[in-house]
Amino acid sequence: MNLKQIRQDFPIFKKKFKGKPLVYFDNASTTFKPLSVIKAMDRYYLEYPVNAGRGEYDLAHYLETEIESSRKKVADFINAKPQEIVFTTGTTMGINLIAQSYAMHLLKPGDEIIITESEHAANVLPWYQVAEKTGAKVVIIDLDAQQRLTPDLLKIHLNKNTKIVSFASISNVLGTQTNVQALAKLAHTVGAIVIVDGAQSVPHRATDVQMQDIDFLVFSGHKMLGPTGIGVLYGKFQLLEKMKPFFTGGAMSLRFNKDHKVKYAPIPHVFEAGTQNWSGIIGLKAAIEYLEKVSFELIHSQEKKLKDYCLAGLKKIDHIKVYNPETDSAILAFNIVGVNPQDAATYFNSQGVAVRSGQHCARNLVDFLKTDGTVRWSAYFYNTIEEVDRFLDAAKKGRNFLDAYF
Ligand SMILES: Cc1ncc(COP(=O)(O)O)c(C=O)c1O
Image (spheres, protein in one colour):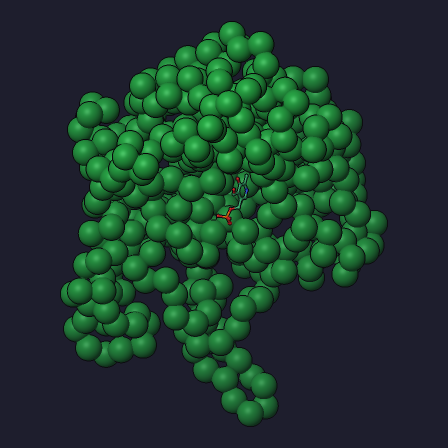
């Protein structure tokens, strides 16, 4: 597939904003959707808009087959088994589910949960709650000078009390990638489990939960061309067996009576209470098929080309400070010196360029970056060098952005 073909698959690129095509560099927040994903979701509503797991009629059976085929697709995509795939609403729900169903009843006072200072709120706040309720302690590791969690750094903090090590495989602010396999190997030496927040890595890099020896992996469909409101929790089967269902209700129970006796549905259905996001699950399968068609080789090479070009351009602008020049992905955090990041993002918007500003939900990074906030540029494989040029043109004028406005 070439880039021109790829862009034709995304209806949003045909739209104009203020008379020009939108330049979208907020892909770490969410990505655009190709027509195949939109059509797959439409097909659910147009052709078999029923409930799964409850009906003895053909349409319900058909939907069930589609859902299990999507589960198999997700499993193959990350080299897991279908029964290890739990559908969630996204990364946030995935980590909360592990926190509530696993950690809440297995952790004790004195146990330790290791995270890093660059984690997204979704990988911080559930652990604060677990700590409050169980008496366990959250240990927040400061990154090294290269903005990374390395095995050497982890080794300093690991001990016999460490029960959970939870980190993002790619940081949503710094773009740095962790060596998941090495960190997992190390964590396992003290018997800790490893939770990988794959929100920023699964859409961009091939993931192999077996090779990387990941215990739990969570990610979101909407950051990988898929629908919003659908995500995945992968767990090694023997760990899913240790989890107590947190969401309870229909579909996750087979039988119950007035004596409070409950027979639960088997894993993974026991963690999928209530009516699920059927169209989202179907759309996620279409998103994975699209990513496979494009290939991670192309995704990676295109993102690297865009990032190298953008970084080189930003470095030439005196009034731009880049905070993560060592990034491993198409994520750059920067500021226009002397301009509040939110004002800068508003200015970029006036130039038809969408970027994110603020702390990007990673508030514990404020001290490390020595700034209250940054502007974040984040690209995906469908972005072009011409779009980066439009972004850089706006960045050049950004110092006197009020002049550029009026
Ligand atoms: C690293 C990381 N973790 C977790 C999340 C939360 O994802 P969601 O809002 O899809 O649950 C994000 C979203 O930006 C993220 O970048």
